[in-house]
Image (cartoon, rainbow, N blue to C red; front, side, top):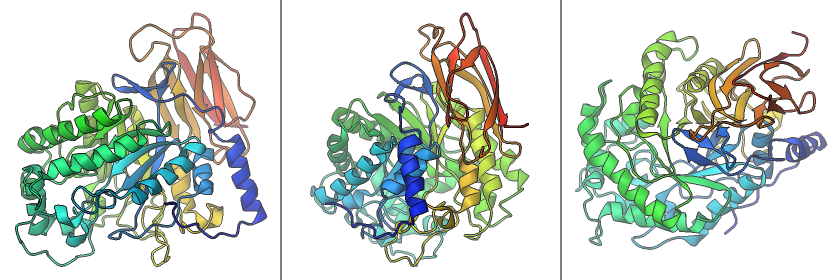
Length: 505
């Protein structure tokens, strides 16, 4: 089933912008498909890939109504601004509304969005998303029939996601039963139902070139064990005995259905706010570790900009923990959520976005910002404290953008490196980008030869008057001012250094 068409009246200028995006953005000559070399994403030629992207939710919160459509103009806008990855949040409740019953129309709707994204050159991660388990707990994600709560009464909706988790014993019991793999009413274990839903989806997209991989579950909640997890030390027992085994079980089901796609897994949700993770290896490959960083102080209303305690106490420790996991298990990293704040919806939170994206660059982590837009055809809640698009029913022209947020996520970065990056950084204040890399292949199989091409995205949005380049160890082979700066490795170069600044600096 196709999603409902969004009725739009594109002004001539907007149409021109979209046409430009479709013809001159990164989608033209996109790098080959993404694979894995240890803790790095690589393309088919072995170049190290860094992925920048954004999330989009396929359903409105708490609803099974179709969202407003993510359309060609949305995908083109993202591609034109250097975003190559779409984390598409979908719900198991839509995939399997009754035990053993699958909804092909829902999955076809997922496919419509995947097709639109792929046409623009975006890779897609299909994410089985959940927040507070299921609709009947004032959440979303699992079908209500998978909510085995033993009759524990549902607490009233607080309107706050964290409170609906931490003050709702019925949600705890539902998760406890899920982690214990208790049977549903039909006698089939809950995790087997979940695996069947994943097999159905993975089989549908196993051969779709636009799908990079499948994310097992958004923000797994430990249930009644959350109090043992909610400290910097984390909860090794839950992570090792329950969460890792669950990830392995579902990862195996996905890998059997779609062996060439990434299986992507997450730590338990307390990691997002400062707890360490003890998640183990899920065994299957290719695989990637998806994690979120949300400073706990920001979630409780402390000033979102200039809050340096967040960087030192609520962010850097999480990046260190993610890097440790990547090094230990040799999997690449995706910071798959950051940027959702309790600030007012019109407040400028670009300083936090910029800071967290910079910390991700320090450990070489790919990322997807949360999020693009709220799917809401009625328009009652057109945007919130994180979205970059105000109203999904309208095109992504400047008057419909949260421009401070857009400018914070649109930045210069190395999207394909003929070698291994050792450092890259973006300074938003001075619009200066620096990169250092060696020609050594990420998989350890030798080095790239002379003439091998590295691609750096240099956004016209941030460099409206062009840019200047200083480089050693390579030569610029792209046209002046190109959004994709191409560097050809010099003969006998053992390293490359690059600095990009605005023209005239």
